[in-house]
Length: 367
Ligand SMILES: *Cc1c(COP(=O)(O)O)cnc(C)c1O
Image (cartoon, rainbow, N blue to C red; front, side):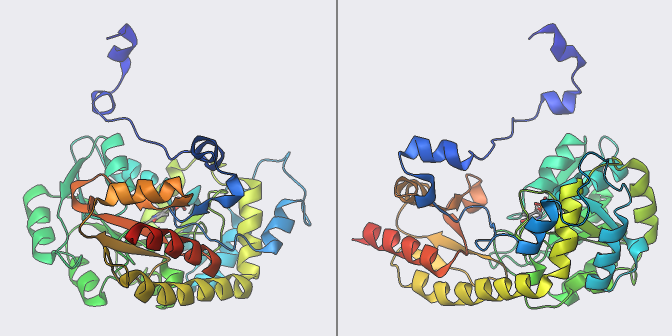
């Protein structure tokens, strides 16, 4: 071990390195395919891209101010979000993606050895950031239908004194909703419940659990512009938070965490929400069209979803081999190596043309 290793926090030194996703141009070169030919259905990105008004706002718009530091309080963006969510600006805090807010909440609450409850299969960042922050992850696996094991969570809280429970609604990658009665029951537990609503716009539930923030001391909701607003590359998300949590997070957030470009694009997106929500409706319609077509393939069992992706169980063949065979044809899906998801692939919903390319490749593999 090099001497420098002595300076590393032991909980970090013991972590497995994170496997990053390959940039599209690198992957295209590796596959020997032109980049325009790739059908990218692996990261739940928006196939219709951002609002033209967001692009114009970033290009200069009415405030060409990239030489000036961004507003650390995100004043205009929070006002626009108050209008969009119905929550007061005092309960809103923005981050460089919802991912930054997950990390900030953990940095705020978790001392080394404290416990966080994670309910896989779910989004990987909760357990990743818990480990980075020196916390312990208590895992309560979902039931076979991917609903939450409520008794298991209650037992884990009693046994560990956990401080935070992360839930995702709709869940990624399984696509199922969180029943309001389940959340209501879990909010009785003595811990902070963070509900990640990254996909709420696709779920047809209005403002979802975001509307209930403020009614409970221990409910926080996370949102993002990455999926519905097509701004994944800009990194902008927000929390709807009880006042006590917002006040403490303000103390530790980096002042300039959301760039000028990201703030302007997010504000313009909210002003152009009708256009963006029409794209969301097209994605939802495509999801409903694609589900029965995927079910026709003898080796796929697609699971109904309330988000912009469909998880499919792969039967009678290897899910990983299927993912790699599609990749060689330029169709990119998500596969997970974790034991709970080894037999699944996740298909992000693209345009109808992208679905046709996917179906053609799948049918070619069926014969
Ligand atoms: C995509 C995703 C995020 C990431 O949001 P960013 O704003 O891009 O950081 C957060 N939570 C879930 C469940 C996601 O799927």
